[in-house]
Length: 158
Image 1 (cartoon, one colour):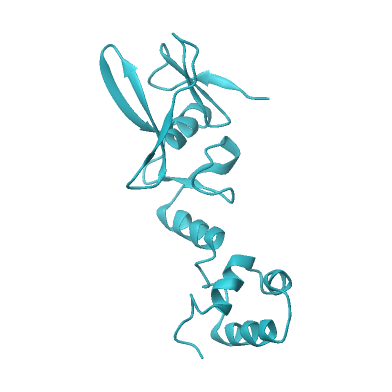
Image 2 (image 1 turned 180 degrees about the horizontal axis):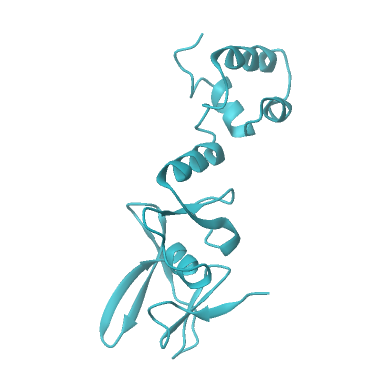
């Protein structure tokens, strides 16, 4: 079930849902979301008293359902990726937490394994072990194992 609350800062004009949608109270229509080219995340244009405001959808969801952004915190997207603005995929966190989450989710981070483990992962994958099984054993994601095996990460290691 989708839950709607008044959008913080736009309470008289818009509502935000926990599924990452924004609707106009005046028309009842769901607002169109575009992709912000700089961050590749959804944004929405809100019109209030002949003035237009552009807001990131993820920020509206967090501010409405969680509260204002704490000092020094950023919006973090979880395992469902940066295009999913559902409440259960969002949190306020530090920039380093956000970077680490992105690396783990996208399979671009391998800082949880050692050089010796990288060699072992590559050897065992070459011998036919499944990447999913190696990921579980070494405590990393399958995309991270794939990046290791394809030498997208740890390129310097033979």
